[in-house]
Image 1 (cartoon, rainbow, N blue to C red):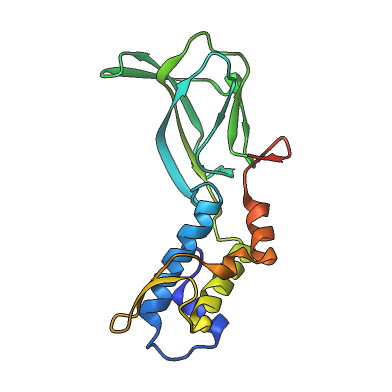
Image 2: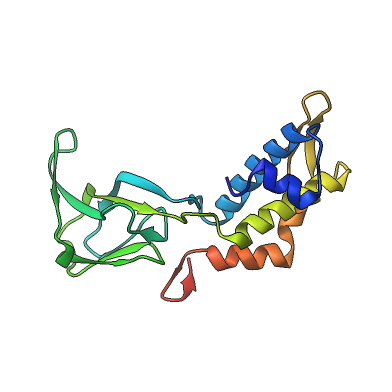
Length: 194
């Protein structure tokens, strides 16, 4: 999650606990929304094991699902021999590829010779050890704006008892401030967003 209940309440100046369930739901929704805008990648650092990709003979680069790549875990790239049902994985050496940590991609020194389904896998760590302050701030801002909206604008459904609300649209997420921060964290390869 991009923020916590305590941080949202501090940002909003809320001292009571009567809105905790609603705030917690909004934290989940806003975190999913922002991560979705960033290509469904996780922001918090984690280890990704055995992430498998097809090999295309025309490519030398693999865009990993999560980034930036970190040094928390050793980076491992392996190629498959054997069948799909009984694969045998062999590690590449560090001289076979270059890791572009910030953009989250791996560039191999030579092209592959054939198309191979599930032909390569990676184990690596990626993400941020702590959520960047500007991402946390916009998450807090969107949540508090939704709490303060007090109207049904953008709300698909609402329940009073459990403070349950389902949002069709997070209007405050479309502000120029929010868009600028999201753009900052979108994947860029060779300086261009993808």
